[in-house]
Each structure stands twice: as structure tokens, then as C-alpha cells.
Image 1 (cartoon, one colour):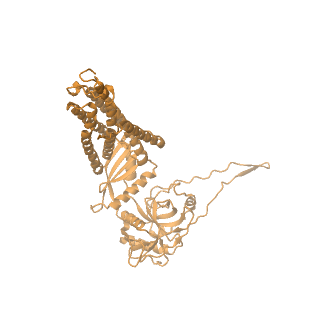
Image 2: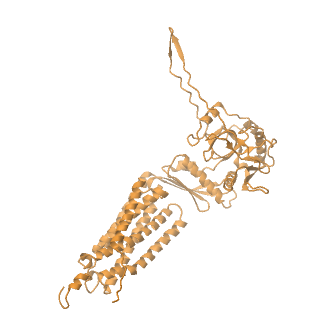
Image 3: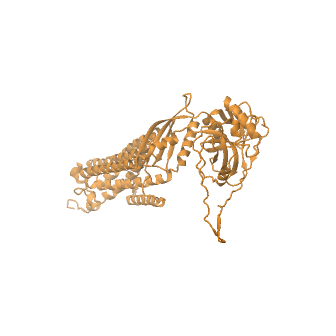
Amino acid sequence: MATTSRKHSNPVRTLVVLALVIAGLFTLVAVSGTWAPKLGLDLRGGSTITLTASTPDGGAVDPASLELARTIIQQRVDAIGVGESEVTTSGERQIVVSVPNVQKDDLVKMVGQTAQLYFRKVYNAEASTGVVTPTPSASAGQGTTAPTATASAEPSASAAPTATASSTGNKRPLPALPTPVASPRPTAPSGETKSLDELLKWEPSDRDNSEFDEFQCGQTSPTPDVTDQPLITCDRENAYKYLLGPVLIPGKEVTKAQAGIPQSSVAYVVTLSFNTEGAAKFQTVTAHLAAQQSPQNQFGIVLDGLVISAPSVGSQYATGIAGGNAEISGSFTQKTATDLATVLSYGALPLAFEVSSVENVSAKLGGDQLQAGIIAGIIGLALVLLYSILYYRGLSVVVALSLVVAFGLTWALVVLLGASMGFALNLPGIAGAIVAIGVTADSFIIYFERIRDEVREGRSLRTAIETGWVRSRKTILVADSVSLLSAVVLFILAIGAVKGFAFTLGLTTLIDIAVVFFFTKPMMTVLGRTRFFGEGHRFSGFEAEHMGASNPPLHNSRRQAAAPAGGEA
């Protein structure tokens, strides 16, 4: 006798697996140590500034210059110790700066200024590890072997003097005299103009040498970057510290810089050109440096107070590098050479930034917005549940549980994304989550109405649950796919906070698909096997008169099998 079999999924097993997945997500949340989502600036307070870049000739903005400007601004923001700040490029000429708990005036002052590029003489250089510092070299022709700059500084130790006094032959120590506190260093130029020769004769003071000895990269703040004052600072990697003299050549006098491999060479070099005034200064400076011993034959290229490079000048250039064209050679890779050339070009032709928009949100206003968003979400959930109770009656239990599962998954994923990837939930993101409630409700309605159609066509309830799912899931997937596609397109094309709306809408749409497939449908199968729902009891939502069916949707197979022919069940 031939038999046929149909493979049925186990709804209870599916629900158990989903429960384990949710438990696993919340275990990860517990491990992360935070149970609340990371909030955006519009909810926790702070400032957002949009800067629009322009070039002196009004032409297109070089992407490399824009990215370099973004890096510089990020370093400025990080320097004030503000955590969770964000500096991003947007479009072809905009930079968006978002910093929590900083007022707009302070933020505009900090990020609105153009980066400053300077050439300073190196008076002392020391590796943070105490090893010899290799440096690139500057030349007028092909690259030369970079000399090795040895950095050394004797530690200074001074004890406070002790005063004594005598009286009737008895001596007793007086309290130690306090060490004088050095006056703060100037934060602005004095206004006195000095010639280049005078600047080259400048020598560091005892205070400069002492502070350099005590300076620790990454632990001590650099001295103020003032043009007519010395500068004690580090390179961008905090690998070396430098004692630099006053500014000798401003970066604006560089007209061109590029990286490449010259003919008959295999190593990368950086070539740079100066304008007429800069060329004369550069020749004088290099002639002076060529006569010095290491490390005082080096000049530091300083951008925003940090040393980008410190090439040395060989003794063969005793008359200086003339013509305004120079070449920096050394142990360059393509990336490091390109980075240095970009810095020199950017310093020579700085981008001008115009503050296009400034948004300042206080913590109080952010809290009010968050509260309003939560209230709006609760109202949306309440309306969906009310509609479900009035129209679907007992099936509203499935709606409520499905929304609880969706909320749990959304909460856990938002918290984990905030902890691992820095995703911050902003007000548009909350709006996206509220919109997703409607998307989830659409999925319920499509499935439930398909079941009602199947019952009205004469199928039993158990059969209607299965066939209704097969016919409705395609519609659910198409509807969710449209929402997901809209979210992806909006995320790619949008800027600023709108991306939060798109990301949250896309995330919750994916969660809706998971909930409908792995919770709503298995739950309906389980409920369809119970007496209350399976036999169409009143208020179950499966009553014959409520669904418009001519007969009650009974499907209790054991009861039907026990009924004798022509008799009563």
C-alpha cells in the first residue's frame, strides 16, 4: 500500500531556538556592562556643526585635502578630552562635527580655524624609547642618505635649598623654600617683528631645556603653538619629542608638493616648491642648518602643533638650497610620502571653511525629546494593540507577544551595536522605530486576513493556518523588502541625523521578518491546536460568524473521528 508523507516543521522547537537566541543576545548585553542604548547628540545634549569647504580659486575641493582637514579637526576635538565625538565628511565639500556636552561657541572656535603649517628649527630631539632617531634629509637634487640624528638630554635634578639660622649656639632647620612656579607661556605672538637672521640666532633658555627633559609624549601637553615662541611637542605617533625654535617659514609659502619616485631611483621622495619669498627664506635657513651638528641641522614641519616630519640638511648644502625647489628623501613608503606631500600642499593652499549650520541641544532639551519619543512609541503600540483586540479578539495575544519579542530583539541589538560599533540612537532613529511598528502591524494583518480567507473558502482552521502562511509570506516579504530597500537608499544618500532614521528603519524591518517567520507563524500553529482557538470559541478571533464562514472552523480530528455515521459527536 502506497503512502504519502508531508514534512512539517516543529513550531515548539522553533520557538525554543528563538528564545535561546534572545537569551544569548541579552547575555552579551550583560557582558558589555551597559543596558541602555547609546544616545545621539540630539538626545543627550551637545553641538553639531556643518563646515563647508572652499578653495581660493573657487574650484573643486580635493578629496585628500578634505580628508586631511577632517583628521586635523578630529585631533582638535580629541585634544579637549571629549569622548564619543564624531567628525565625518559629507558630500564633496562638507565636514560634520558632532561633540557631546560642548556649547556651540566653543566648538566653532575650536574647529573653525584653518590648520597652520610651519617650518621650525630643531634644537633637541629625543625618541620616547631613548633610541637614536633616524630622520629624512632635504636636498636640492636626488635623494641622499638620511643622516642619523642622535637625541640626548641630561636629566636635571635640583633640590630646594635649606636655610639655617643660629641663636645662642643652637641651629635648627627652617622650612624648605618653595620652588618658584614658572609663569605661563604666552598664548599669542608678542607682535614684535624679527628678521630671519635674528630668529636663526635664537637659543633655548634653561627653562626650555628643563621642560623638554621633563616632557613626556602622551602624558604632558605640548606648549602653546605660538609663532615667535619655542615649541615643545611630539610627532603624531608620540614616538619622538622635539624642542623647536620660533617659526622660520610659514607653510603658506609652499606652492606645490608631491610624492613620487624620481628617474634612476627606487625610493619615494617628496618634492616641494616655494614662492619667491619662501625660496629666499628656505635658502638662508638650509645654509644655516647645513653648518650645524645633529639634531640642530634638522627643521621640523609642524602642523597644528605636531611634528609631521623633521628632515635634516646635509653639509654639502653650505650655501643653502637655492631656486625654491627641494626634495625630502628618506625611508618613505608610498603612503608616508603621499601623506607628507598632502600635508605640505594643504598647508600651502589651506581650505577655507564656512560654518553652514550650528545646532546646539541642551541635555534638558534632549531629555524632553527622548521622553516625547518614548510617549509617541507607547501611543503607537497602544493603538496597534487596541485595534488588534477590537478586530482580532483573542488573536491579539499573538500580536502583543510578537511586539514584545520584536522590542526585545531591537533593544538588545541597539545596545550591542552602540557598544561595539558606536551606533547612537537619535531622535530620527526613534521615529524609524515607531514607523516600524506600523510595518510589523502590516505583517500581522496580511497573515491573519489570509487565514480568514482560507477559512471562508471552506478549509479547516489548522489547514488555513498553514496554507494561509504559504500564500501570505510572499506578500510579507515583498512589503518588507520595499521598506528595507527604501532604508538602504536613504542611508546611502542621506547625511547627518537622517542616517539614524534609515538605519533604525532597516534594522527593525529585518527584525520584523525574523519575528514573523520564527515567532508569529509558529505561535499561530501552536494556538491552532488548542481547544479555545482550534474550535472557534467565542472571543478567540476564529468564530465562524466573526470570520464570515458558514460553518464553525472545527478541526479537532479526534472528535470528528469519534463521531459515528448518522449519530452525534
